[in-house]
Length: 155
Image (cartoon, rainbow, N blue to C red):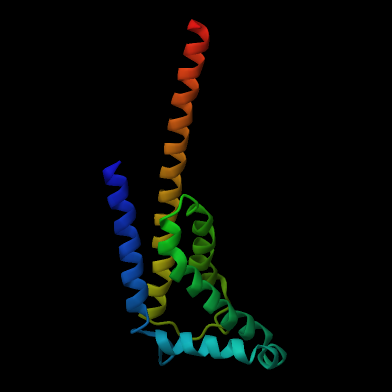
């Protein structure tokens, strides 16, 4: 039980450390993670014009703030028993950039790979937390059900 909590905390801490570090590393072309994040927020402001000019790029740039918001909310999700609901979107966020066409996403650097790795680690932490909460739930009600069944047989 204690080892599982340490594993979840370790994964979550590593994910957040890598996520924060990725903002200071070169990510795409000659931009750092902060500059890419700022560009994606700016794309939200000009979404209608960008959608008309370059629809694929517009969808890509507007997805990044949503993905980053999910990562920002992930420590709060780890505190709840419903953290498993965030593990699937984080896993999708970790894998979907790999399926984008090469001309849509330009040259990628270490910051991009660290940013992407942080989502996979946090998805694993959320999934482990959710599985632990489910196992505790099952154990509690299975024992309670067994005690009630034994009591009814004796009764």
